[in-house]
Amino acid sequence: MDSSKRLEKLEKDFFKEWLHRNPLLGTSLGFHAEYDDKMPDGSYEHMLDEIKFLHRTLSEVEKIEPKKLPPLQAVQRDFLIHVLKNWIFDREVLRFWEMQPEAPQVLGHAIFQILSRNYAPLGQRMRAIIKRLEKMPKYIDQSRTRLKTPVKQFVEIELETITRLPGFFNLLKDIGREH
Image 1 (cartoon, rainbow, N blue to C red):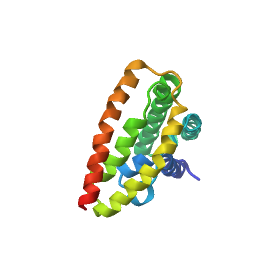
Image 2 (image 1 turned 120 degrees about the horizontal axis):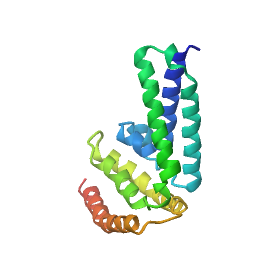
Image 3 (image 1 turned 90 degrees about the vertical axis):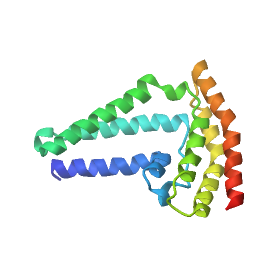
Image 4 (image 1 turned 45 degrees about the horizontal axis):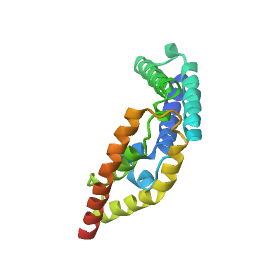
C-alpha cells in the first residue's frame, strides 16, 4: 500500500476507534444513531489504554514518510502528529484526569447535547437520554477509579456543577411530561 493510502486508512481507522472510545464526541459530531445511547468508559484502566492507543497511532503515523505524500497530505500527517503528541502530553504528563472529578460535567454534557439539538423527534431523543441515564451509575463508579490526586479547586468546581444537576434533571422531567 502506498504512503498516501496508508495515511488515509490510518486516519479513517483512528477516527472510527476514537469515536468508539468517546461516544459523546460521536453524538456531538452528529452520529446519533450510533452513539446517543452510549456512555464512555470512565475507568482508570481505560485512560491508560487510551494513552497506549494514542502512542500506537502516533508511531504508525510517524512511519509514513512525508516526502512520499502529496503536499496537502504531508501537512495533514504533520498536523495529526502534532495533535496526537498534544493529547498524549495532556493525558500522560499533565494527567488532569487524575486530579479532577469529571462525572458531573460529563453527565450534564451527555444529556444536554441530545436534548438541545433538534435532529430527531423529542420522543426519540428522550429515549436516548433515558438509555444514557441508565448507564450513568456505571460511568460514575468507573470515574472514581481515576481520581488519584484530587485538587481542591477542581473538586469545588465539580461540586458546584453537581448543585445544578437536580434542576437540570427536573427540567428534563418537565419536558418529558409535556411531550
